[in-house]
Image (cartoon, rainbow, N blue to C red; front, side):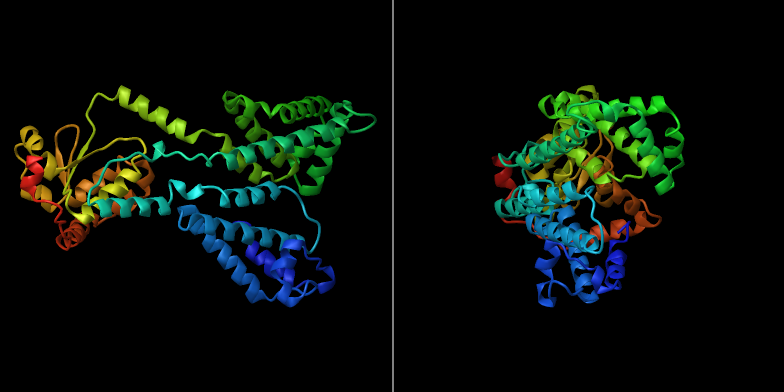
Length: 409
């Protein structure tokens, strides 16, 4: 979208057919028009629309693997179609390969709309909400795609380092690191692509020597980040600085490779570590949500809230099962009121109800913070409670068991 691939596709179609040399992925998806004929604009628009829609559904995790496969095929077609009218380059090759690897992996197993819908169906079928932590979900097949991408990045860097070491006469030489070679590339690319920084750096011999050795050492030893994961915090920032400098000086866009660095980051461990530290340093109890455990709407609501409670910052209490203990600590609360609408007991002892309870809950769930714009929009304090009351008044309670039987249990 940012680079206007759609416009680039349509403009290519206006070029004379003699300049059209379709790559294989383009041939496979345009065979009805023949391999030498440019496909019509409506077909290109259709592929672009399907790719865009499948990219959005893959991002939110709806029909994840199918969406990822359609997105991968569409992205490959779009890039190959643009390259079918001239020279093609390599910066986005690994990114396209990664899309296919993700499509073949259990990418939708967690943190996806597919997983959330499965959780909702399970809790509604059991007629009971049970708190859970999505960070504890594991899969034997979850890591293979990430490891494959990591080693592909290593191979790319080793190939680049080997090419530099084989530059000039002989093998494993240092001709490329003599300073003059990088000076030449900095000056040439700076003049060619309009980079004043590249032209300026190309004037200094010592810069060519130092940066050349840094490039070879970085590319030749990057594999250590896979073998020793602790070195990720050294190589990833170095790689980001490395490719940012290349872009600023030579206008070589390796943004796709920089994005793929995310496969090296142990996201789950970071969140779990942050959660443990936060719990250890916290001097106050967690906010407690009081909900009707026999209400399907409440079961769904608690499931959704718990799904985004990555940092375990909330407690969930069904009032019909824990009313005796609740009444001891909060004698001012009414059972009928708690069953009528959700209550939130804050660490300082104050209570929020209904819409205002939900708005306060969102503040404890960082993934849902974008909703705060809507929840605190001018007029939301008067409109929100009415909507919440309307929805709550149309809910039905389950007949799993009576309140008395739950209390006796």
